[in-house]
Image (cartoon, rainbow, N blue to C red; front, side, top):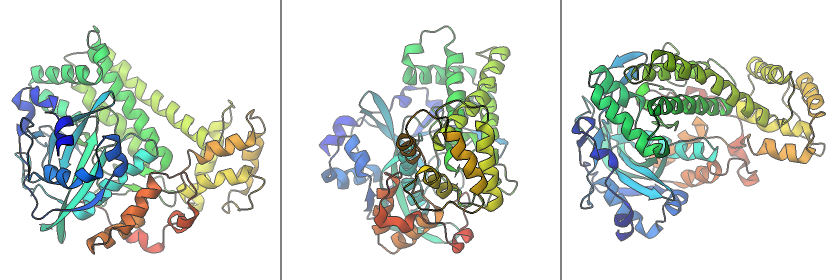
Length: 477
């Protein structure tokens, strides 16, 4: 316990005006027990596995650290396009912050009970949804995509009611920030412009201290949020990731993937794929994510109108599409092992995606298999329907300067073999609900090293079975 006492500090967000948060203690789960610990993250924090039981009691709220006051954050947001003036941390607390290397990270506990922002909710999280977030944060990190990550997940026999009775769980997650687009929206739309400016100043001093003295520091802040968001969503698209609930209260100002709910990685490629059963209009479909990212940035940018001219805001917003397009094209070129410049590259990528859609090819497996086309020593056949495209692909590689083995290695370091498919998650959830956590161990091994062959786990890289299409995910997921 002494080790965490030395590094866990009162979060600097608590130094802001009381309008920004409420002081809050966790409501402990009864008889909590460890389900899984992220040993990689634990090591990064300089904590030993011997401290896990004490850490669990701290995150559960069973014990407290003097002078460290947990808080729940106050914010609003656009949900499915409609502005909701009062949201906030309804089932989580910002416990504190710790310094890791040269930056501070939030320690946030999710599922910790009711807060003033819970509305009609119980403030709890269930094992099912907690395990999904616990694993996906690490999967995204393994793919090199900015994301919140969880230090541990622990459970209880306490019952929580959703569509059915389920057992409660909590996760202790980390992120560079838990400030959301909706944090700024709250105070702007409430007419508390001084509070909005206070939040801007805090964000700049906390995350961009070198720019704090700039005359155009508010423009700098907004520009960073817009371009980081565009880059993040390009990353999502490149691996077939669907967030499912891109409300502005789920959007991090530092471009980190935050608040995992009914997410999913695409199996058979379908641009109009919707992973959220609650999204009847398809607002947050895979193909709409880039546009929604820009829409969300626009909603945020509107709150800066008292600090930045409309002309400057318009100029900053124009950076979104440019950043997104440039980033996504660069990612796809890397996925195809291409380094030189060729005018036909965009057409080559688009033709591949068109074939994948028509042929209903598996997104992850198709991109992983592309290196086989270039490998003369590999006898693995490509999917049917790619034969003609494969010839164009090989001809395009003839103009590359780097040696073939380097390009194959490049492709296999950006096209994952293992992805956190929903059916794999469901298997892990089913077993965890029966008290077995072996599948969690296996998935953690694979998602933290998604590019390695790991031949002994070949079945985890196979296409999703037919029954996986029946997995239903809603906002309660």
